[in-house]
Image 1 (cartoon, rainbow, N blue to C red):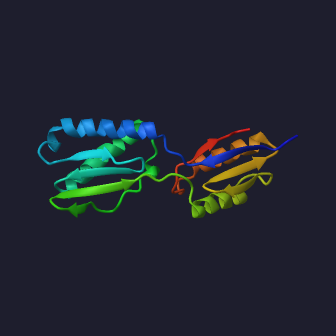
Image 2 (image 1 turned 90 degrees about the vertical axis):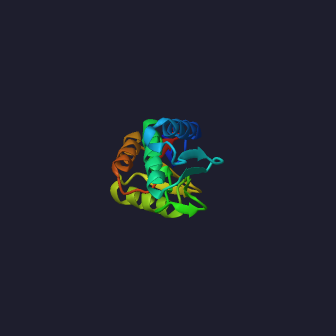
Image 3 (image 1 turned 180 degrees about the horizontal axis):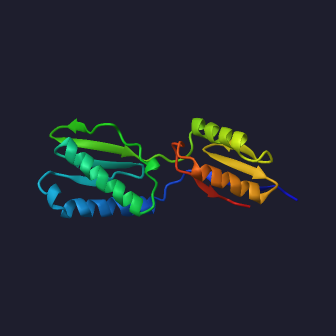
Length: 165
């Protein structure tokens, strides 16, 4: 019997991100507490979200609105690489938030170590670029690995399991 396998990836659903940004922008435009503060949120290219406001507190409030819409659209907040403080640019404060995708080498090694230490012994994992391939003879063991990784809160990356065979 051939080995069963699946891939662990970290991908962004770009359409859901665009929907979340558009919904947040609509809410910011309509809310009374954002009137006259120059608050806005927009997507700049595929990998950047820009938030603008005339005070740092308002920029962070717009960020909260964006996060709320991301959660509603089922986009993991782990894809947002939020800077610590808004930057002053002229008369406005800006938050430039890059969207992160893919699993970095250090996170891949961390996930691989978790699988090696805590998963059933028949499971093997290997790093392939920005994703991991997990193999085992037993499909039950593969499902145990998926359960194990879903329960971990200390991972810095949003995981999806694809290509299950």
